[in-house]
Length: 438
Image (cartoon, rainbow, N blue to C red; front, side, top):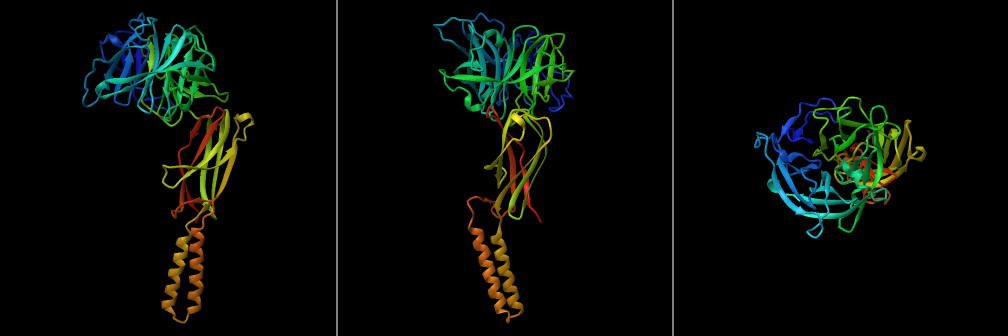
């Protein structure tokens, strides 16, 4: 979804984009055609199937604002471009305060809430509301102030930018200085560091620098941020020269480099915002992995992996699961990269003793003894020996070492690697299966 600062273009939807390459974008579909209220720089696609936004038609508002929503289109129910509706109205700074406010960014979070930023006389506030049925909304809550790297940001800094959430609730914000050729920076706040009260503070930390395909600052404003299903970032740039929607990829210095050609440059001079409803478990990984393998050999779990790129890495944590859903941490491997950064291939290995289903082996031996007994009743001595072996093995299987990992007789484990940044952010690989070696 893209929003345009133009009454005759309103909101548009772009589909068919490859989230890894940016290829395949279809022709944008008009949303809420002819609805002049869709002139907005702050919108979010909520999980109830409605697009929420605040009109920018009048910024001399004394704090009063109206939240609007539009049904998802096209669907089997909504077959023609819908009109917007009022979701709720409020006075964000109360009736006793007539300071004008500016709404510049909005994003849905994976827990169902929609967050937005508010500028008021140089102070930047965070707020949220809860989308309801049929495009309604409620539970509007102020969440205190925002700082950038511990400092109060100038209001002009927040005039161009946007916010987005990943699947575990981490907050990302792209902020572009309100000048030509200004720095565009993606800031970050872990989910646990986001304020939950009006007296709190959410500190956004510098995460990535955003550069054009030449490695320079964009000559025009970076105004939108969204996350693709793959975890990559989309940005929107406003202006005739470099305007359009771009997919971000990262170089070995940690900078995000934009491909030379945008995914789409339709209405590029009036693009104001971006919104998606994807919540991948992480954004583009600070570590690019090579092959990852896991197996169980002679009672030990062996995990091998390599990295092709590491940026600000601290360590890897190994987690295992019996069902692929509930994981347990069983060990840590520190990064081998100097200061956590490397653009060379680095190999890693992790080994952990596991408790294999030897009880089943004991039962099998016991059964074998019975068979032998039936074949030759004279083999009483052999029967006794087999019984002792079976009981011994069964007993061993029930006496688990506290350092071992129990695979509950299934002969396999689901394994994933958690990479931990220097700022504490955590990124999980997809689980792989470790089978018992033949």
